[in-house]
Length: 132
Image: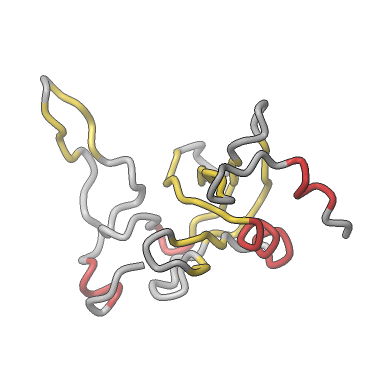
């Protein structure tokens, strides 16, 4: 496959693009992460979500420690070409490193952020005291 499609992406000045992972089956937004060119290319080639860790300065395949992989069903580029939407099959039922199904578990209620989704599994038991 030609890689010319990567030239159509409007990377930010750090060479990154925000990537939204949405569950293909339910339509729920699971998480937001970042991709660089290599992460997006690897995601397309492998069929699994691969992101760029801004804190660790390296690629990370979602689920590499937890087993909660994201299988790519489709990839969309937004109208400004500066964000991607990954439609995924979420393995293991959890996308969030906090042990929840999705990262968007806090809802603004009466001026405070309330956790509105349960922890499905303790992060310590998922990661053995390391973050994904």
